[in-house]
Every structure is written in structure tokens, then in C-alpha cells.
Length: 366
Ligand code: IPM
Ligand code: MG
Image 1: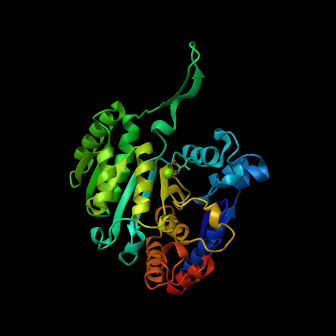
Image 2 (image 1 turned 90 degrees about the vertical axis):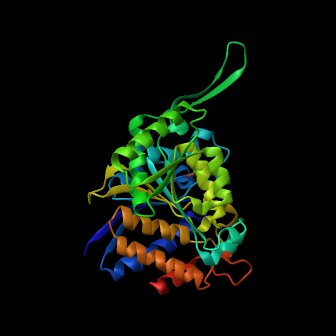
Image 3 (image 1 turned 60 degrees about the vertical axis):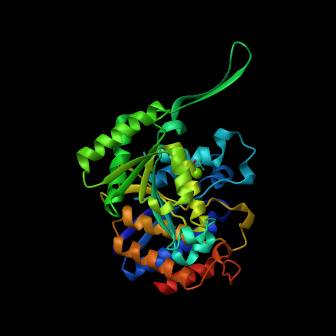
């Protein structure tokens, strides 16, 4: 029986709650195809700090290195907020993991089912058919990682902090290649988002994406947009985009905007892929929901597990090449939700179910 080897890093607060249910769904879907899950759980984030003294323990990194993919929950929360910024779960676990595995391509589907348009803060007449777009965010460059990155006291006594925004042409080309692949699987429309009217990195970004698409993907309709305009256009008419690609910091901001217009964070999955291949010759990746640890509802059994489950589906698709099972899981989530089984975040005052019952409804659809 073929086995799927992946690391399970559930993290903190609702992380383990939704992970348990996601594993239940994956187990069921895999079993139907005679596949076995062989996952190893490891501590990360606050759990890493509490149990090992560091957000990303060496033992956890080792488990990841020996796996074909990482299924990630979410990390951080009030319990660790008093630590120095560099030791906090987000900065000390997630960013080093992305860098360690060169996970430069973050794919975030912005998906809102027609039946859930009421969950969006946008007027429903603007999105009668829901939303279906994709954000491709560069994840290992730009302001997040550029050096110098430091705070210094100047000779005049003033204090100065600096972050460095830096991109190489090769880094832009490889994320452009990811975006082209994503656009080809959809409507072949790609919008590159930058700030080329001000930033040097954006001038290089725009030129590189333009040249790369002209050379490698003349079939793709490429457009460019300044990031401030893109933020506005996303709120005005999100479906004018199909796939958009942008640098790390802009992608961080625009993907949160995209998440909120898509209603609930509890529905949004993501994949972070890199140059590295796993033992199957497929992309090694980290798969995580977009919603965070939600400390306010942790321990109550009411968190929406859909984003974690859908992240599992992305893992099956990209890191294990199991497109058919991925699509079946995605269809089962959609069917369960649209036929009325809903956690509180997407219930609009109607009947609600808990985390476990949501997963059970999805399994029933499988
Ligand atoms: C995200 C998050 C992270 C980021 C934080 C937690 C470091 O906001 O994945 O979008 O900024 O990349
Ligand atoms: Mg973010």
C-alpha cells in the first residue's frame, strides 16, 4: 500500500483542534484509494517554546526534512506575546521554516462559494457568483529577509531602524514561473502587482515579469497594477483578477484583504512551495490555513476546520500528485457547507455545528 509521508505541525490554540479533524478527513479520503497516511507529529510555535525552549526545535526541523510535505496548523498567541519579538512563534518558527526549505511561492486561493456571499463584507450584488481568484505571493525575499535589518542608536542620540527590500532577477523569475503555471490552469490571465512608480525593486520586478512572460508564456495575458490601486480594485471588483502575483510584503497585505472579502478566514487554505523536490520528485511544500490560532475560541470545539482540510487537499495535489483525491475533498467541503452544515463563522445566525461535526459532514460527502 503506497504511503504518504508528511510532518504534522499543529501548533497552538485551535491549531491542534482543526488538525485532528483534518487528519480524520485525509485518513478517510486516502483509505478510499488504498493509500496509507504515515505522518509524524512535532511541536512548533508556542508548543515548541513550552516543550523544548524554542519555537522551531531541531527535532521538529529533522522530522520535516525527512518528510515529503509539511501540514502546518497555526502558531502564536497571547501566552507568548511577552517574549522578545525575535523569539515569538511567528518570527521564530514560520519565517525560518519558509527560509530553510526555500518556500518562495505562496499560493493563496481566494475562494468564496456563491452560497456564502453573505459572509463577505462586500455588497452581495458585487459578487453574485462568489469570488474565485488566486494570490501568488513571493515568500522568501523582499523586506522580510533583506539585510541589513537592525535598530541602531545614531551619534546624535536618535534611534534608527532599517529593513531592506531586496530582490534578484532570478528570484522574480522563479515566482513568475509559478504564477504562469497557476494562470495556465485557469483563465490564462495574470496581473503583476508592484510599486514601480516609486520602488527600485518594483522597477526590476515589472521588467523581469514582462520579459519572462514574453519569452516563456506568450499565451498568458499579462497586466500590471500598482499595489495601492490593487488594494482598491480588490475591494471594488475582486473577480476582475484571476491570478495575481506580487512581492512578499505586498502579498502579505493583499492576501489578508482577499481573505476578508472572501468571508471567513476559516475557509482559506494555502500552499507554500519551493525549489526543493520531495522523495517522490514532486514539490516539497508547507500547507497551512490562513486563519491563525484564534485564542478566543480555542478549546471550545467550535473552530471551522475547513481551511485546514482544504490545505490538506492542496498537499495531496502538489506534494503527492493526487489531483483526483484533492478534488474530491474540495468538492466534499463545498457540498457539506453549501448544503447547510456550518460552523459559527459561516452560519449567519442559522444552525451551527462544531469542529468535529463539520468534519463528519465532509466525510459523509466523501
Ligand atoms: C502570513 C502571516 C505571516 C507573514 C506572519 C505570521 C509572520 O501574516 O502568513 O501572512 O507575515 O507572512
Ligand atoms: Mg499575513
